Image (tube, rainbow, N blue to C red; front, side, top):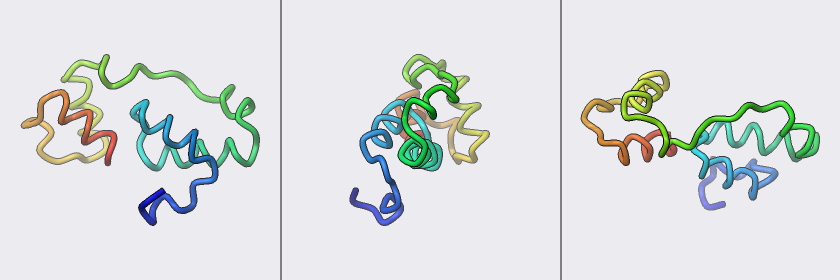
Length: 88
């Protein structure tokens, strides 16, 4: 991966898939590294399921953005909120 923040990712394929699903960088890295260390099937059984951000309402996206401290979220449209959540 290109950035130095991603240099410790042990399962890059899983990390990318998790990020595309809308998971934060931290969560995706934690899951990908755990899957690498313990095995994907073992980790997969632990996790829950969340709808893709595209299926969330703007209110739900703004609430999530508020939880993680994204500024100016009330000025953002749905696409911008999704982008901000995925890249936070």
